[in-house]
Image (tube, rainbow, N blue to C red; front, side):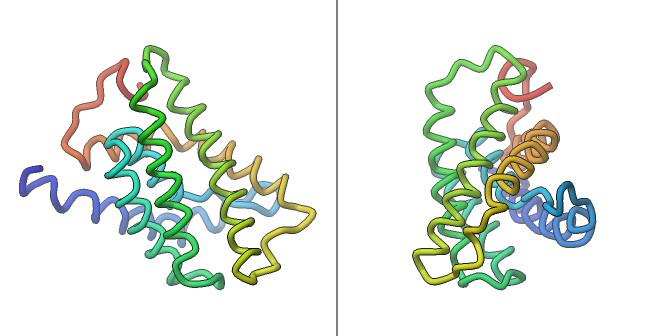
Length: 170
């Protein structure tokens, strides 16, 4: 990692946090918004592997946890696990199609939202598991899948990797 790329990932996390809190918080479908900070962790796992996915997941989770009314560290824990799992899964997948990372972002977002709700309920936040949970996870998954190509390219830039046509997303 060069000196130039060392500061790119924190810059991407900070920019994503600002976009998440200011712009995406106003864009809602069925009362639900995209989870850009989770998507940043997923994109880090796709482009940087399991370790970078976990580290970026922890950092993005802690950043957003400062603004949520959930237990501090809950997002960091879940995003780290999701980033690591995506990085591990992506290592074994041949990415010859453009839609594979988009599908990965959808599945990982749905899984991350479900794990977030379940872990939150285990630690005492009963507001997360509701009758709307299925709608929330599907909308977050779909919105994150739409945002995935740009987010994956941004994380590839942050890690100093030139995304190729077959490696990440066009």
